[in-house]
Length: 78
Image 1 (cartoon, rainbow, N blue to C red):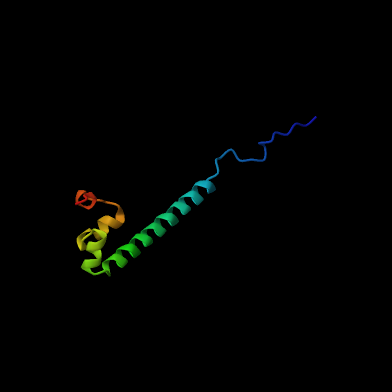
Image 2 (image 1 turned 135 degrees about the vertical axis):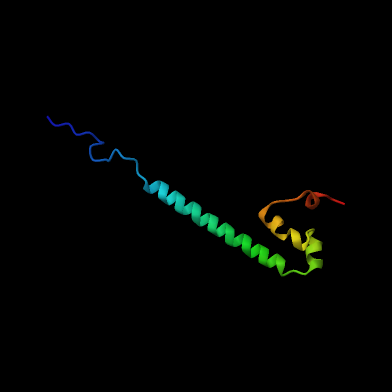
C-alpha cells in the first residue's frame, strides 16, 4: 500500500514571489505618491501670492503643506 503525502510535491522553501510582488506594488505606490506630490507643488507654485494667501499659505510653505509637515503657524486661526 502506497501513501503519498500532500506536501510531497511542494517545496519546503517559502515562496518569495509574494514578497516580490508586495515590494513591487509598494514601490509603485511610492512612485505614484511622489508624482502626485510633485504635481501639487507645481500647481501651487504657479499660483500668485494673493491666491496662496487666500488658502492660508505663503510661497515658502508650499512644500511643507503638500508633504504634510504642517507648522504651528499654519494651524492657527486668527
